[in-house]
Length: 204
Image 1 (cartoon, helix red, strand yellow):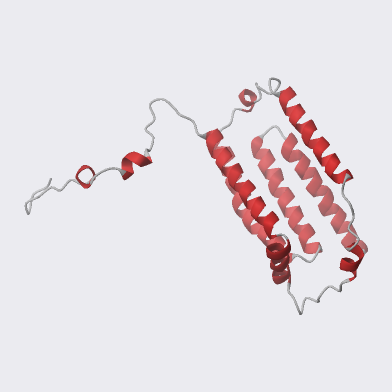
Image 2 (cartoon, one colour; image 1 turned 45 degrees about the vertical axis):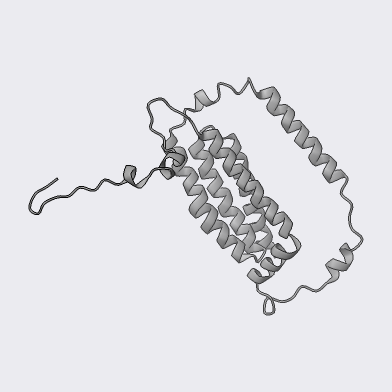
């Protein structure tokens, strides 16, 4: 138990430190690397809790796909950090006000939380052994029954975030040909296909 507790505190400390470095590092590439480190340590915490499936998903999906994609995108964009920070002081008041409102809301939510009287009853229910219900099945039963609405809400939030990221990064540049889907769909056969008869033994 002592070794398990020490490993937990090591993983937790490195995860918190890596999370802080993600938002404080000046270089975006370093931020992504610290994010990958935080994911690996979070996976270690899941293994300690007996949630090997979540640990594997965290490493395979987030580290192997999302974080590496972030890394390649950041490296290819060649972001000018100094230029991006020029408007920091301009929006500091608005950003601070929004952050303060969110902090007050979180404090109000946490302070108004009422402990249910059924907590002791739920806590006394024996946990089935791994031979009866394995980890993945238990996770699916909880996620898609009790927390199904929260799961769907998180999907909607991710969808809105994805659309917002596309809208914010969509730039119109002079001299760049853009794809117009409506013009492509409305093209007729005569406009899209040109048939040429070529005699045998000769080129076009």
